[in-house]
Length: 129
Image (cartoon, rainbow, N blue to C red; front, side):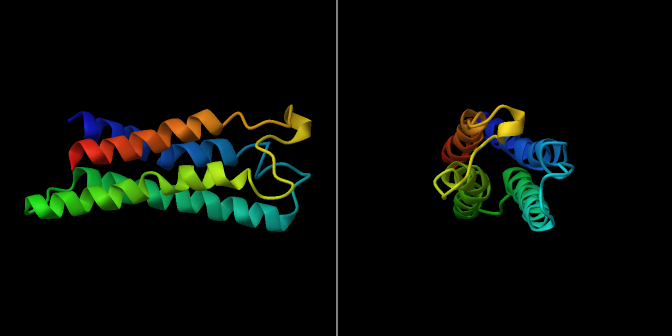
């Protein structure tokens, strides 16, 4: 049950984290952001929500066999962590920052949050498998 709890925490982070953080004055409603940046922000929000739905679905779907349950947890390891791992990797691209200068950057304050949610997805999947 601990594995399912961790996966549920991860899924809730995916479902609500990006919309809450990115539909804000620092991102989507930031007048300094060009339209194409806002397009990619919308893409990121949508991806997070879809991965959250998939993670929640495979966490609570009842598998017909033990083998199917393991397969569900492999899917969850991917759907529950890939968004967070991509967020961690994004800082490696040229000119990126986790926080714009107008809001206190440079910095990457969300790094520990991303690590925490990715860990919930990976450890939760492992415990349930």
